[in-house]
Amino acid sequence: MTLESVVQAILESGKAEADLILEEAHLERQRMLSEVREEGAKVFADAESRSREVAARRRMQEVARGELDSRKIILAAQKDALDEAYRRTLGRLGDARGDDTVLRNLLKANEAEWRAGRVFASPKDEAAIRRIVGDRYAGNIECAGGVVIEATDGTHRLDLRYESLLREVWDESVKEVADILWPSKPSKK
Image (tube, rainbow, N blue to C red):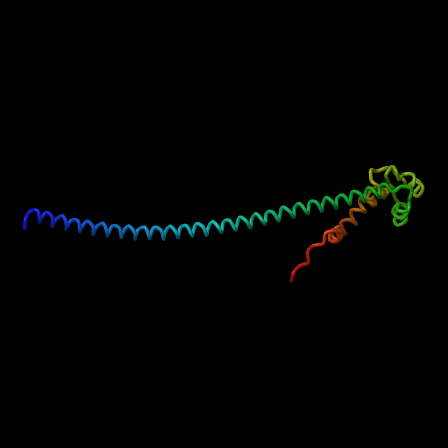
């Protein structure tokens, strides 16, 4: 064999070995890329799943917050409407002039109390109350109407002011009034 043929054989052998190494490297590269792609796909799928869960949770929280805010707004509007109805009712009671029937009935029902005590009333009701109780009238109080009867010794007071009477009736019936005005949805059983 000549030197040139030995060199040629070594070159061919080296080229074959280099091709084999390149082929193995190429296969290793493909295997590594495949593993990285699989791992990347898993990471991406996990991240996407977590993101969807977070988004769904946030969406539920926002919907719940929105529902709560809307309930607060509705309740505030309902409270305002009830407060306005209360104010108007008290105003109408206080503005009822010329008809002493309510005052007469209050005093008649509590005659034993005022006969043994003193009677106070609003300035606008003074004349009517004086006609009924005479010298038992003790003075004026600021109120929409009605009377306050006090024992002579000051030990107890009977508050029959329109404000107090309306508050009692209101407290007893406001839930019923609200249920009539704003019926709640029937419960599902």
